[in-house]
Image 1 (cartoon, rainbow, N blue to C red):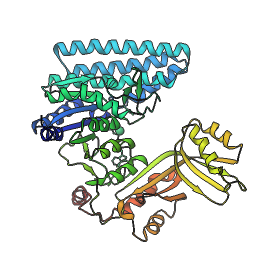
Image 2: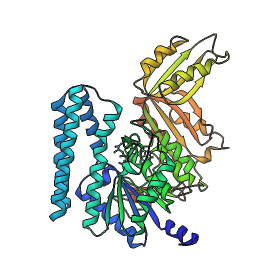
Image 3: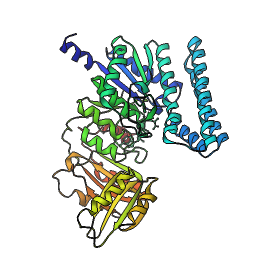
Image 4: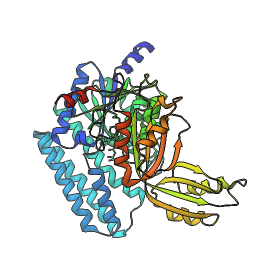
Length: 481
Ligand code: ADP
Ligand code: ASP
Ligand code: MG
């Protein structure tokens, strides 16, 4: 194949990721098959990444936790419910020989999961490594079932064990992918299948070390897998199929009149994802940016909708913001050290303590005598505070949330913060920051004030949305009804 032919064949490859709700039961899996068929009918080659069926990951984690506390009966009861759900889904999805084989496989997998849970309960301790093994069952099972459904429905589905391609380090629970090893494995194991007209189906979220030990990429990590696969295969596009019409002006669960954003830049999407918009995993963007692969966010329940396109450059927009995100369950740590604060090496000593416990800091603000930082509620916080107490007075305040407003058009506009803070004047605001990237404005509020603050901000900034950037049609239809 010539270089030009190769480039054009990669252009025709699309990596499609379906989240938990898009594979939640047999009906959803069949809808997924229909969407993939549509892409193949357009002459595209398809590689599919799936999450575990909706809520399965939470339940597997609950089973692992119960086993870790020595509650064997509790852990096995959860596993038994999951076994029945997977068996029921298989019966609704498949028939004949394929069904019999799948039932046998599901039973075998749950037998081995039960054995694992019994082992954890006997020791009474759950390590991150064992937790990853337990939780991996969700994606391992869903991807097998979806591959069989695709085979049964004429899509040439073929299962690929993601743990053999997504090579990571051994930081269990949030493993770091090794991109060049992944690219080599994908080229060797997945590309020939896609080139031969098959649809490889892989579980998202799970990976394996070079030695073959199972790992996971962190919650919501299937988006990340999709981007790694898209990047490694130099795909023409990555599609993230979920349960909403795309990236919206805010979480539609908080604000029912949130609007779809038609196009957003990589930079804006990355800020939104990082600061809490669950629709996309924060790490998703990077592999796609590095290879300039467009990413689409689409609705598997409404596949005709055009979704959100994430591209290198954002189109001009009359509104300053594109979207508002919120990250809850944060803690503010105030470090007060009146004399030492500005002395040489002091800040480094403070941040080294957070670093030692792998605790990520979201926001920092300093005054003459204190540093305030916000962190994800991290189970190591008591140890961090104990160490900080040796060099400063430390105070922790929990139940905080960060609201983050994102848009490239806040650059160089005046009067924006006035509008923001007057819209939420009744809310107590702590710590304010305008990101160095100048495309986000963030501040901390009480967790209990988040929803109300977001609704007030949404009303202020999206009352007259720019129709070139936002899908205003849905609102017009609602107003007419
Ligand atoms: P999936 O299982 O498909 O990965 P997620 O539950 O992880 O889906 O993400 C989709 C959810 O993200 C939506 O149902 C929505 O409630 C939430 N969400 C939060 N912020 C936004 C936003 N700005 N735009 C769209 N959805 C958002
Ligand atoms: N199933 C995993 C989770 O729930 C990964 C994902 O769905 O993206 O976190
Ligand atoms: Mg998700």
